[in-house]
Length: 552
Image (cartoon, rainbow, N blue to C red; front, side, top):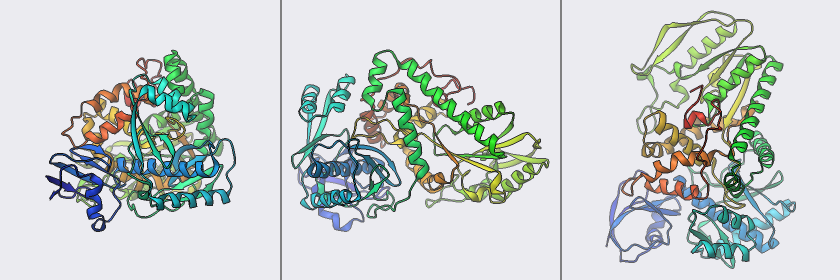
């Protein structure tokens, strides 16, 4: 039987011969020594598959390592499984919550006890024993009724509540390893021996599981104490307690009970209160230059406009600017490693002109500000003569706004930096988290289709390149911010589902984006849909993506 095999992203396919019924793991292990990185999953004819999958006909196969988002999440689920097994072996049925990714790791907490540094060392040692034992991960897909029975038997109260609150879920996957059983909605590696790269650290009130770098899968990421990110998550958790929604079942129950409108209004009020607080701080500190940055689909434009209104309430007269008008001439745009224009590179901006214009404005001079013509690829002058008055303040939004190189000529004491991102704090249950990158991709998917004329396939196809640019140009500067704004709404996935689900379902099996579309649909099945989103106000960040915004 002939298999067209690819082992590197964007690499070429080569033909190999295998016996009918050969597993993907057997194919991988036959050539593992030739490959640079550990493979944890595969795409078979554009469908995501775990390595235990057996092949019975000729097909195209692509082996995946954690440089691919879907495979990265599979590694994280598998690492979490080993971690939870180690905790159970050492401490019995001690509850553990796997919260979020931060400081280049998975942040976990023990709600009923404090874990010491010595105990963290023991957990890591037990994990390494489990890895050495290479215990098989046994998957069993069961009916809804059987899943509820398992949850009762294993004391999984939150998971039982999840399944009960999502009537559209008909089949559920459970994994077992060495006598430990748990529910995970994604795929896993075949056995514990695959989970080779990790490190544990006692961190704040919990434990941080260091993950390997996505760009260098055989190296565990170094620790960066992202203080502001931790504080933002902690604040959001307090908001979620106020809203009464810590897990997806609680959200589903509120929607089923007709409480979505109240939930939306309360979440929007929390946003408005936070933006008003920022405006008060800026006024009190006498700042003249506000810099706003964040990754794709964070809601930067809406946030900046709402902040301008709150600054006006404080008696200030803001001038709102984007950095897109300061692109270098098209022919001067730097190229990426594939020889394509890299518009997200800092060098794609005319830094000298930007600094000169901003400094002159702050000094009260009249400035001929450019307008970038995206058709011709050149800046046009003479259309925007601008001069700041005494009570005016500059509000600038752009992906590089927190990079000091962008404003290197401007005194630090005049600047106020804001980092914005939707930091999803809603978990499916205690052990299944929702990656913030997935939430942002849903936002972008809906916005691109509705307002930019892009198909869902296009958005999914270009997303890895967007993420690479964010890792390079945005995330390293998040902790330089004076404040961090979490643009996430606890209700939003249930709203976005109505718009995104048909787009994802329209992607066919023969298309390269099919596997990612199916992965997204897999986690969306646990959410009830908010069909009536009329309660979302017209200045909401959500309106930037679903339509009806007064700003965009």
